[in-house]
Length: 174
Image 1: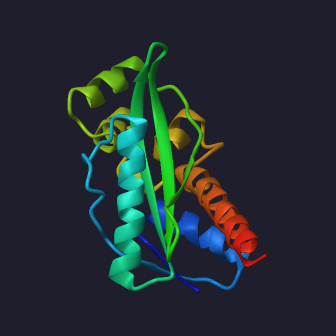
Image 2 (image 1 turned 45 degrees about the vertical axis):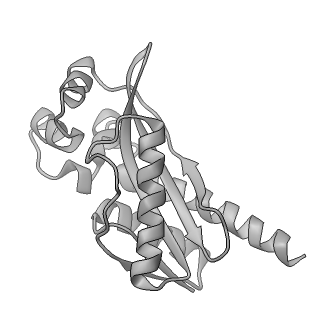
């Protein structure tokens, strides 16, 4: 079964590949597609929409059986700024399946910079004095001391997506 992910970001592509290696019987292709939302999503709704758009577009562009979209964003609550991460799976004849990932608080100064219009990846590179954090450990990796990386978080989301997909397909075949 062919799976397409709507990004070329190595952290996301590797997360999906590890998920598929665990499940077996899937091949993966990656393609650059638009999320159709802001470069820096700033709500759960916008982040979910970006993931769904990527899943649908990847599946269509690669003529795949399954499309995967993974999107990172940020939300603001009464408790401060938090990372949010969402994934979507699209397949023939089913509504997109969604799943969310871990949330952790961000330092106020980072949240304010992102809210002012600077992408989190740019803020994080400057904050950590590193390059391409979004393609490596991610903000979650920085703020968990490397115990949870962006790839691991997105792998968990991918497993949640495929778990729901397999459950739905098994139920519909009964």
